[in-house]
Image 1 (tube, rainbow, N blue to C red):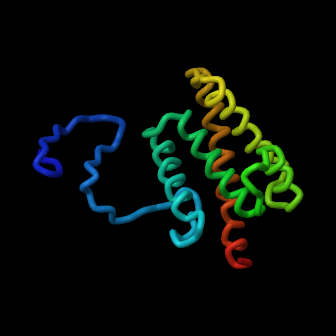
Image 2 (cartoon, rainbow, N blue to C red):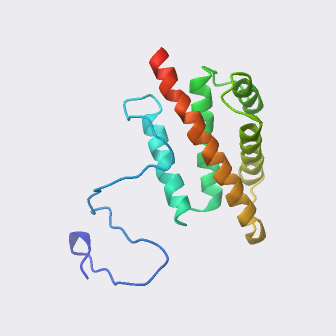
Length: 160
């Protein structure tokens, strides 16, 4: 089988999807409700959505998904709360709860995400196979909270 630019690709049965970057994109389904690209967070959240989708299909390591979901949630929180660069993560979560952007479950999900990120990023750890199921459940909850938080970016844009 010939791939893009005359490169010969062998058909191999794998658990991943093979693409060649020359494939035209016909359709795109978002995992999170991404704002328009014109929105200040649009490009950042578009990338986050792509990474989350790849993680969901098994094409992205759990460790990278943790970092990306944290980055996206932090960007959304800083934007929606008009928080500067120096506000720490716990304070962002407290402000979001006070502003009724997060409930207790949402706060707990994002606290768990941050705790896992600290272990992975700042302590150089990797996820053990025995911990993967629990980590994926935690990531699922955090992604749900990111999607809920992202809704507030639209309302913030309307006020600007």
